[in-house]
Amino acid sequence: MSTTTVSPTVGYRPFAAMAIVWLASAYLAGQYVTVLPFGFVVVGVFIFAVPIAISGAYSSAVNQTRMMSHYKTSGWFYKVFSGRLIRSVLWVIWALASSFVMLLQFSTYSGLEWLTLVLAIPVFWYIHKLCNKVFSSELKKRYVISSFAITWARLICSLLLVLIYAILASMFAAEPTYSSLAEAIAATRVNTPEVAGSSVVEVALFFLSFANGTNAYLGSNLQQFGDHVPLLLIILGSYMVFFNASATFACFAIPRAERRRIFGPISEDELPPTLTRSRVAIASALVTVVTIFIYVPVFADFEDVARTNPGFITLLKNAQLKVEKIDNEFYRPGTMRAIELAKASSLGKVNASRAILEGQIDQAFNKMESNVDSYLDWYYSLSGEYTRLAKLLSGDIEKYMEEKLVEKMKPEEALNPILAGLEVALANHSVIIDEYQRAVKTIMANNRIQVPEFGSARIPGIASDRILVLPTHFDVVSMRSRVVGGAAAAGIGAEIVAKIVSKGIFKAAGKALSKVAISKAAGTAGGAAIGAAIGSVAPGAGTIVGGVIGGGLAGVFVDKVLLKLEEAISRDDFKKEILSSIRESRDKFKSELFGAPKAQAASSDNRERN
Image 1 (cartoon, rainbow, N blue to C red):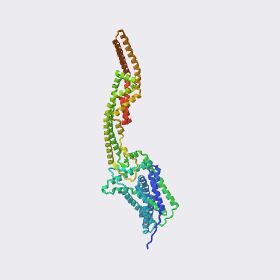
Image 2: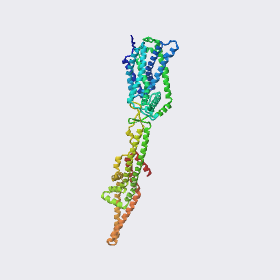
Image 3: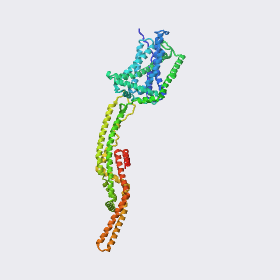
Image 4: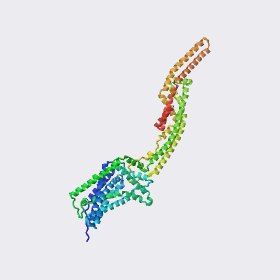
């Protein structure tokens, strides 16, 4: 008749509570390990290492107890193979080193890995429960049953988590391909946060991303050996965390009484004896020495070396190649640089076309400037003088002078070539934009890559609509409507005249003309009276007519002399005022067409030349 030995176990509720607290702590630690100070990293690694070390130390203690039934305690076999202290020390070393790496991996974990760790809690519990049931029917000693159940559950659970992760990864995670190792490393750094706390963490994250990138690159280039090779490499990279999670849950599953075997004496009793005060003191002293005098100083030395060698960290930063993000897609390092070069080339073509159009604008306004002399020639002519005098008497002098200026400048004739030049420039501009957008889309298509992470990336991106637009300052609609034949010419001419009117030039000229007109009329009348007096000596109407003609000629002579004098004194200033108004209109025209900065620069250059 067979009997079943029942091993004491931890209840599911306390186990689940401890496992959930551990999982929540792991998540928070992953979020803050890169930003909190060095002390947080030291404490965090220690806290996560303790349950792993306890799990391994318990297995070592039970293993040494079992060895007592096979070997003499005084023999060499027992000393070599039981090895409780050596195994426990190795477990402590593994727990501390792997917990540090595990914390770094937590900082890069995405939803897929966290989902697997959530499933690890019920998976481990049911595997442990099944193992405990199987070994209870096969083994005698309860502590052996407990140890076997924990050891096998730890192993089976970690392997099963790998299988679960493989299934989830095959369903939800893409298998990216990379053309170079640098590209793969850059892709793996997409979800790697920037480090603001510990220098050791910064260095370690760099090497971790290098290892993960190498893994991804090898996987993408070994697809010819099987479709599942890349997936297998990704899974193997996650095995350490799954094993440590299983070891931690194994610690939570150790019955309270069985934990005394870790620091207690070797005993084959079903219930290990209570720890004596001396044992507790020795255990406390051992933990204190290992923690304060070995673990912390060693970790601090690594941190000090990293902090006192900033050049090494700078070298690592310079060696890091980050992928670039456009919209929600990822691209090879250097993609934005290639786009900027394409933009610079396109802008060069646009600027060349714009320079031609700007030259045509300058020629048009220069032509109007050259016509100013024709206006001034008319202004300082007798015909112009007498016509203005007639307009003065009718009250239309200022309006007439404005219309005459527009007539002489011929803005319509000067500006007509701009319309043709603008159409050519706009056509070139449209072609250049189309070529640029095609070039950008080709660059993006050739440089798009996939990242191995399952989730959102932490690097900022740029919108594609910002990339596809050239900052050319060409307002196509308004400029085409603005520069249309006679309407544009009339508008420019009126604008120039308005600027001159605002300076009061025509108004001052009208007032001066009225004063001069009175003096000229008096002079002409005086000349006629003198001629009449002379003619009275000799009787006859012919003599009187001759006197009037003589007086008129004298008045014309006076007018001619006065005009030449006025021209010598004021023509240059008058011309400068008109030219200034034309150039101001040209600058405004350019500003509306090209944008204010370019127009102002061109204006200043032209002023310096003139």
